[in-house]
Length: 292
Image (cartoon, rainbow, N blue to C red; front, side, top):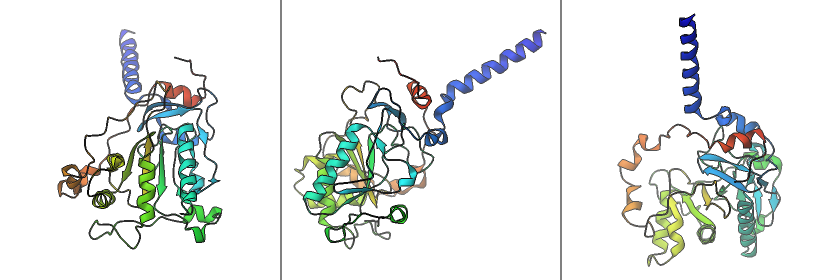
């Protein structure tokens, strides 16, 4: 009987260890993707970090609006914090007012955030959005069909053989839109391909453009740019990313991205999904969160 008891105790301890290391039952990306509605509690509360978090009371971005259209609607990733929804709509209005046509908007986040089965490491707290480097021109500005939204692809702005800007694709409008996005006070960072960052640095040789500091190089991001907002005021459970380095990022730190070291395959390997905050278990289960 003592042996049986000890064996049961051992099994319990092992299970407890695994459970503690894994987080909770809702840390599976498939589980988060299966939820199709936001919570009704704690509206606009981003919880955790951009790559390990969730959101309560997310808002859906209308699929079409002034100066923008949402792509890949079937992915059901057009939810975000109210601040993010306002940002996208503001960007659309800017593009329309400038006569640039319509932005094509990629993923925001899932209805309750959390990890996605594919496509992203971040986008978990309702504060990230992808915007394509493909803008419907004013002369071709129309409402896309459901099929077009699913099958269209944005072109790469980078030449595959050299890593330099493809000037047959890149336009002044792309630079203007990036500058507008990075100039917004609520924006923390804008991720682009290193070649695009280099192009922007060369276009602003005097390095007096403060918005350039927010433009950060990252792997891929050659056909879209990724905007990340700061944690909104009053979101006490939201974790900001570390502060931006000093300077505009046009010197040695940018040159590293074109080094042999940066091209090593291991540099692009991602670590395992971090455990989600405990509050996210209540979010995925739809339980009311206690105000803290």
